[in-house]
Image (cartoon, rainbow, N blue to C red; front, side, top):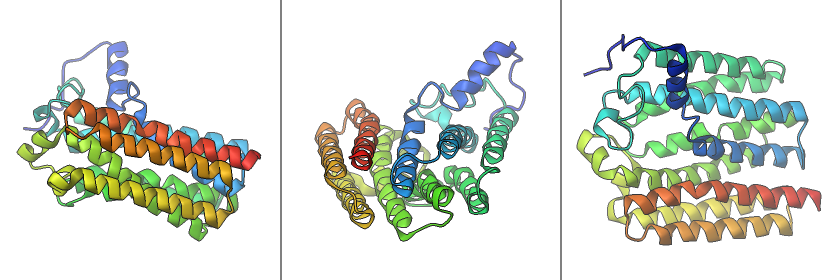
Length: 295
């Protein structure tokens, strides 16, 4: 049964708090996992600190589009979330807000994000349309794609070609290699996330990488980790990066290996802890890149 269109009327302060929960402002891990690849792209493209106005637009745009994506995701999953332990308390699943409100929040946030890119070049503006389509359509791919996390990797990583376009006015091959690396990283960390909900997802018929991989889940995650590190190393070669960048990748690889060990018993708590740890993986790559451009 769908979420009712007219939940109980609440004071504006409570309603704003529900909107904040709808877009996961209380859970910034999603913002960070989108932000790190975007920052990598900007630093690679500029060979250091990018123009400040470009940096600020992309940081704000990342926050806005991730938030809009959460609202769309909850709209798409409104009939599934009440049956999943981790998601049943979300505002839309709990029927604290209406579907109309969720769509309005997503629309307003997307519009603000679009306005932000208007001062940038025409290529960035053109790329904002497929970026919006990817963010809006991903939640629905869980109905029919065997591995929707690959699609999510494109959506989460689309700030990479946009970042190169904003700085260089073009999209070099390096950007697509980096996007490919991000897709593998996304498949890995979202598989960790999906392992938390494996039993619930199987029951309600949602397709996830955790269900597709089955008992080979840790092996599949490890293969994606290895591919991610290898492709990011190749990006470093293409861009002429040096020792500090390589050390950042080594640190990231060690963290990824720790994640697989952490999930060895496949418990919900350990899998979720491994997922959250990916913030530090992104930070390690970025720290190595920044140090490399400085020295």
